[in-house]
Amino acid sequence: MNKAFDISGKVVVLTGATGGIGSAIVKEMAQNGARLVLVSRNEGKMHRLAEEAGGDILCLPCDITDLNAAQKVVGTIEEKYGRVDALLNCAGCNTRKPFLEMLPEDYDRVMGLNVRSCYFFSQMIGKIMARQNCGKIVNFASLNTYISLSTVSVYAASKGAVGQLTKAMAVDLAKYNIQVNAIAPGFIKTQFNELLWGNPEKNSWIEERTLCKRFGVPEDLTGTVHFLCSEASDFITGQIIPVDGGFLAGQDTLFG
Ligand SMILES: NC(=O)c1ccc[n+]([C@@H]2O[C@H](COP(=O)([O-])OP(=O)(O)OC[C@H]3O[C@@H](n4cnc5c(N)ncnc54)[C@H](O)[C@@H]3O)[C@@H](O)[C@H]2O)c1
Image 1 (cartoon, protein in one colour):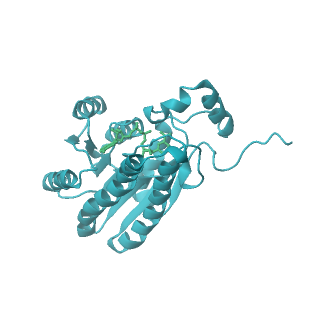
Image 2: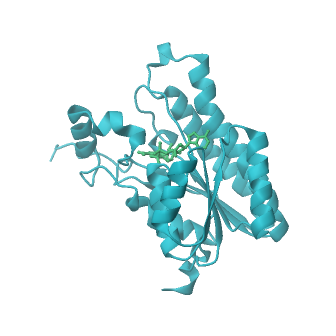
Image 3: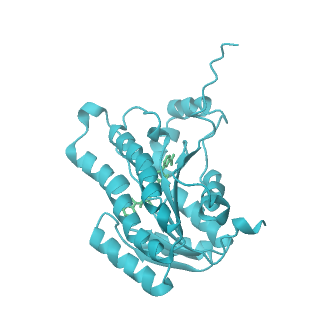
């Protein structure tokens, strides 16, 4: 392997580690020798994943919307490793309802995790990275960072914010040699969007509308995430990279 892509020995912290996308990343990175810190609310699931993935993995149960609990987790990471090479802000949630029916509690839950927790957890880890004068942060944006799909108005607002936050963090953290980027997954088959792939009509619309003519799988994202955590991406910062099977590129209109 080109040495610039080597992530072995790097301390990588993942939120939402036991989710569909997080789990695939954990397995890929463990296979490539990263030292992983999983942050998730579900302790049992996290330990099962760590066992399956093998390698050097620390499991820290935490609801990252509780900033005091998150700060304790960051203290434990600092005590054990003394550094963080990469942070992956993978935790995310959604509420599907028409705009006219969305409640303040829906708004607070989605914005609270997708934006507020991403912001402050990155700030906590960013302080460690600033002291060591290097680091990589990868945020999880969405198709909704660029366009809006129906019934996800709060999620779209939150992922729009994640896109802009990625740029703002890249600007403020550049002087500490920290690169901040985001990936914008297309439709990836996980529990997160079971309501879509579980519905034959919605599933076919997505498969037809995506240029690659299929749903993505979590493994479709792991190469890009690996790249963004490695030295090979040292001159890339403030970017949002769609990994979407061509969804945003355009649509086959059948005109020709
Ligand atoms: N699956 C897709 O099609 C898709 C598309 C675009 C963007 N994304 C984004 O990718 C990321 C991962 O998505 P996924 O498909 O793996 O979803 P998922 O639902 O499988 O995983 C999300 C994870 O976040 C965790 N989480 C939720 N609230 C938390 C909290 N308060 N504290 C700690 N962890 C918490 C969940 O427990 C879960 O493990 C999300 O940010 C999502 O918005 C997913």
